[in-house]
Image (cartoon, rainbow, N blue to C red):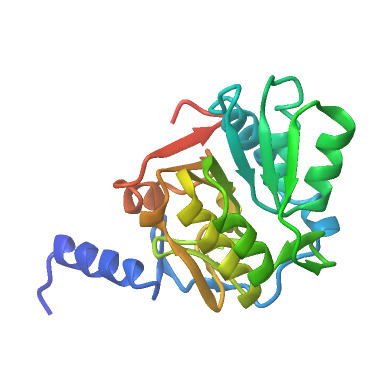
Length: 226
């Protein structure tokens, strides 16, 4: 068949937007599937350098006197570690580790969502947490994910979906914070499409093909001049 490279590329981009493939250097691959989210303990040992860089960059966007949300996760914990000296800050979180860290190391106002406890991830999930979030007005929400792609962020845990959707609707600005190692991964439940995010902060390990696929997004790269 006499098919142009432009046609092939356009067809592959459509397949990626549908979540059927992931474009990589030199070709395509099937998206990896996340069946179970790693525990908090396991996550602390993954992509530590990238998470630290993302946390520092994300924290630089926070304004004194604002009310922010830090989603459960070790990337958002890295954000908290750069906010301990900020004045008049209110932090809402569903993460017990983040709440405890800020309780011990900062003077900020801390609001925990409460809700059903997910022991593995040291956080609260489910409708009770989501209902609490819907009652708030958040300036910035920093949302994490165990898997993301052109379609959006996904999770194998259905009870996390309602929390992420609730905070998206309660926030004036939504920022996805996710390292590049998780890109191209998918899970059963699509929590939020990328169109819900005002900014995406990732690291300079994101493949060039992914950067092109995400060209319409406001991408910030931690630890590089990309």
